Length: 300
Ligand code: ADP
Ligand code: ZN
Image (cartoon, rainbow, N blue to C red; front, side):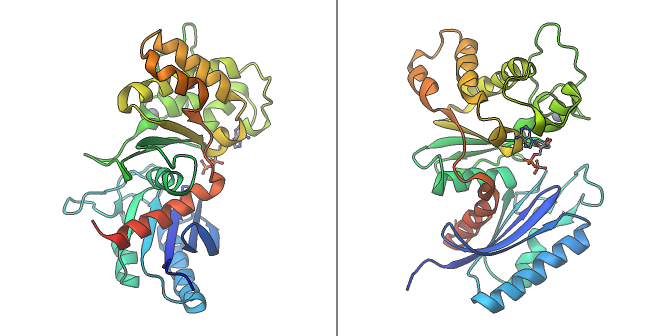
């Protein structure tokens, strides 16, 4: 017998969605499906959760980790919704209240990256951190920040993927972000790599000539993050992050160079493991939803 409650999670991504049941970090059952229209995707997740509860027993709470931008402030317009997204059909979709009303259990709601950061803090690579960042580099670039066990919100939520990156001299790559061109997402996302190299990023070997410049750009972002929130660790996930871990040692060196002999006290940790890979791999997002459920159950 265990006292660990059965919890439910939903990870809503731009291309795929997942529903799961878990006890702690043990996933008991799950469903994966492509993200299509809000009506059909949310209905499919809802009916799978209802059927899964029939099979495994009632779940005590639900957590929803979603692509954003999201309304996270109770009492403000748009709370519980995906607000204005370029993803067709999804702007102003209420996600939180729909599921909370359907299942009647405490329901947590946060960005997919904040949730993944929570999961890495609870069960993964950031277990001893008081401040940590989970950076995902895939189709987009995003990051969650957790301080003392709580994801950072504020006015909206961090949008680290759209921080501007200082241009390398001579680099005139137009950038892949439709809003800012040469923000982090515009310069270091998977699609940016594909645009720059003319090949799918998954096919780029460790020795490809694109990487030194890529390391320089990503190191600009990592240095900004280090100087802004003073994280104990920064985990780099997502398809590019997980698939190109040979970049990690070069990134540590490049960040140290950008600090320019400033913050000598940070150097031993920076040289060792301040910047590292996540531990939960593809489960960071789904388990993040479970962490949100656990927090919703625990209350404020
Ligand atoms: P998504 O962001 O859509 O949820 P991923 O995190 O897998 O999914 O990111 C997909 C992006 O990452 C694509 O642009 C893909 O080309 C790139 N990518 C996936 N695997 C690798 C890899 N091993 N090396 C470099 N880029 C990769
Ligand atoms: Zn941008």
